[in-house]
Length: 247
Image (cartoon, rainbow, N blue to C red; front, side, top):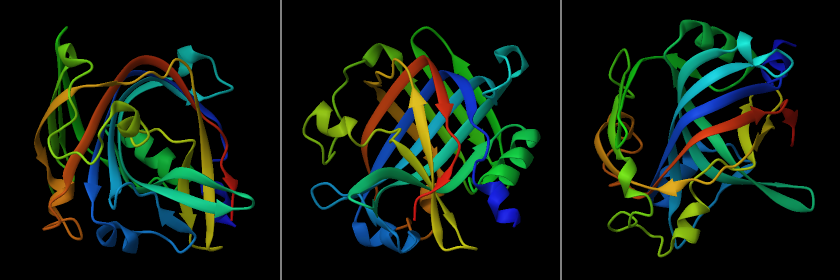
């Protein structure tokens, strides 16, 4: 029954000082084999999408605890945009592939209570009034990432070759979505964690992605991913509700 413990049983609250989401477009046949049977790709104009989220969190804690007892962590996540056909309506959500954090405590607690697949990384953020510069290093360089964000570029043009033609189209694939999906192998079920946020108004920004080794691995290698959008938001409260079985 230990799998029941990994269903995100505790609601979690945090404050996002910075959140950056990079969305990459892929041919659907690259991402489809990574999904369990209950999920389908959420596509647009013949493309499927993978999100890379970088978040500087503050005061992260179980929601029943005061903010003063929360911790400050870096979190990153690699997710696929998907849909779950459950009941009368399909649900949009992000299917977890991998998560990283710079605190060993978060790795232990996160992997005990979720299927988020946390790994330990080294993360630094150099921040000025005009720019953010994230550098993430992983033990075997399997998910190293370096990206610069121009904060003066709000309402920036979409990246070259993006399949999106307007900001509103791109915003639909910028995350976060209503659900994060976990796959529970023991019961062949999908666990959904619903997100709640306030004042979530991300802005498109110019980014310089200097290194992203996660996409250098199979099955992504050779697929020529296209950076489809980059959105930034700052200083927003965020909450993950308790997970529940959706299928």
